[in-house]
Length: 514
Image (cartoon, rainbow, N blue to C red; front, side, top):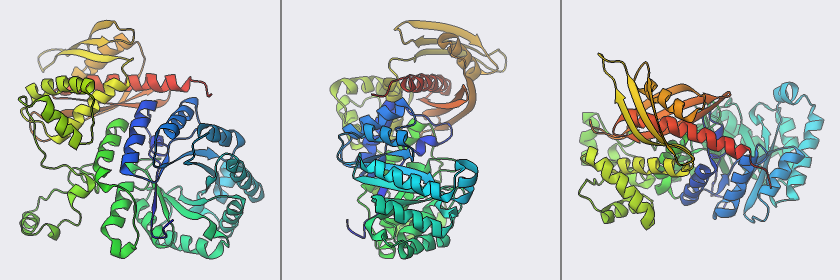
């Protein structure tokens, strides 16, 4: 490996799915994995094979169908977890097992209830057992930044001796800061005698808002793998946002003297796809991928920018696949124009799929004078949401009566899993409440709506509205998303999408591991 290359390890499908309110179906995971391969990340952590039958099948499918990146799965330092990981990756040459174990005294005392010697034995045994399945093994001492340094050096030395090819230093609770974390990496390089036999990786959480800064400090100090998620998803406040660390290295090559093999032009597409599937909108001022990331409002800024772009832009928007003033299509546009624009956006459709999209495109164009790239991406996301759950419920028609002089009432027609179309009518405290209650009558699934939000895809009174809904069922949260020029219809689609995802995820969990 080139010593100046930084390996990009994407854990969106594993740690990203641990984001509160997230939950992915197998088809959704595959769509994300395909896009991550186009992004050319080096490693995809496809899931946690030992956690459930559904995750096992998803990891196995991704490992066998995705080419290019190394496919890895997480495993606790337990024989059953490692065996599940090994079986999921069976026969896949470009694969890795990533095993982990707590190492800080606070974790050992309160979570593991074991002493340091027992943990050391477990760590070594886990690496050795993993080596029985794959040559490429990564080990993570969880909560490394709060671990006694001398013990950390010792455990790293032992797992490398046992065969670990990558040692990951996680800032599991986002406790560290850039100077401290950089110094820790330097001390590991100095005090672990066999560290030259392994790659040093880092996995930083964002509890104090320093995950990106800590990751970059670590690579400056000698780490050569960064782990993170697109859009900074993950447990609690999330992980290092991969788009940020990638573009920091790309934009400041003379400072870091490092590079990645990532295709940065796929960053925008990856970000929007993952936002759509997870149901977590991207904040407008999010670095690199936010809607305002390359917009200039101040008159002084605009004046300078128009004279010389580099006065207020340190990156060219096109290098991250950012879409601003896009080509517009309208109701007079034909299939060829739609296909060409969708190809430019990375959607390569067959004739049958194009025909389905074209119908939806024409319906949308009747309600919206001009359609931009962002509208087309919202349209594609909506079609994927339908196709991913085609054996579940689908919204056919929505009729709502509401206003300040009448009681809200909704009439809903759903296509059901058995092929029947069922109609229901309900009142409510408002139009969305009435819609959801009518849907409940048809699905007969008792869920609680816990969150509702709506945003505009583009500017203007005729913009597509995107609605995000989260529902709770049996203590778990499921998110759904829907888009339409009518936000009440979008709300119905989002609610049904959340219910469909609940059904899909429950169905996956019932499958048997083979």
